[in-house]
Image 1 (tube, rainbow, N blue to C red):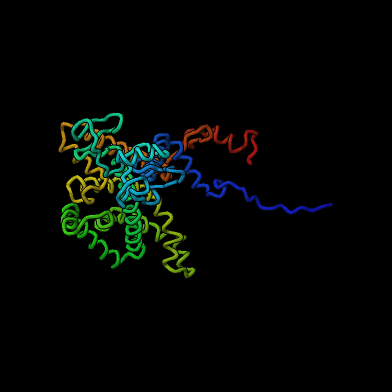
Image 2: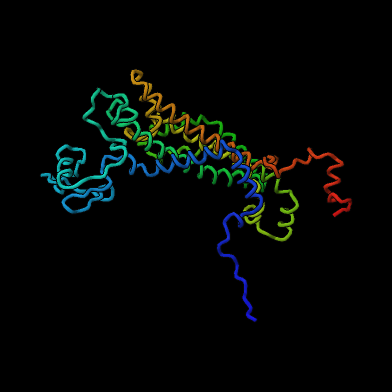
Length: 383
């Protein structure tokens, strides 16, 4: 008789490897339909913005010219490659270049044939021009396509907010964890420093520092990171203060486990439950702060695709209402989606949240005699 050894199931799903509490949180989040669909919509919009060069660009994606293939997004070609006379970079929007390509081949253009800084010299109306078949959301006062600037500005805002949130999370958790776990003089000195640091006028300091140097996205990120982590310290500190006297932490100390391992393995996972519920709101705060700085002229360098600059365009050009409407709709949709996602994360990590469904029974909804019957298994015998 042949004996076969059973091999472990290598195709086991990822869901089976998750802990029960993680599966419960994912289930609760999916039950929040508003948060679930907001997450999908936000992911789609963010994915489109990450591939902005493939969606909005003033260069063709692919060119087939005289039996040769060209990829302008990956390599820069000179004007002489397409029948020109000057060794300058090819201008694919030039009439001569476009006619030469059409006569000797073809070109595949993006859906929006403009990038964020493309100046359209063939407008039918003075800039800012209203929406039409060429510019779906119109142009700004410099003749640049508004939709292209929205896509690129959305990407910059998201990447900036993600980097700022990640940096704030690291600094806030470290500062709050050290204060809460060790307490004593470390906690006292840390609290006094945070009280002084948080009392500084953040917006005025950002404006002063941004006016001293040439602003760019990394310089703004560093300046805002000096203050954005303060909101997480109190939450993490309170969780560490509560958890450091629990029995499993005291047992780990008695076993001689180093403090850094106790904080990392035992205290931090519990503290992150309350911390993660605050992260989406920190994310939205980063977006609004960057928008405010760009609106005031102390944000990104001039010409950069920015939602705050679009708001300023709407304020300065009241005769072009599509600029203000586009800025308001973009910021409103973006922040609303993030708030809905944050509410779903909050409910998912809330241990008091009761799942909805036919199999979920609230203990308080069972009558005493019926509860006894369930405990006995329905046949009068205790199981």
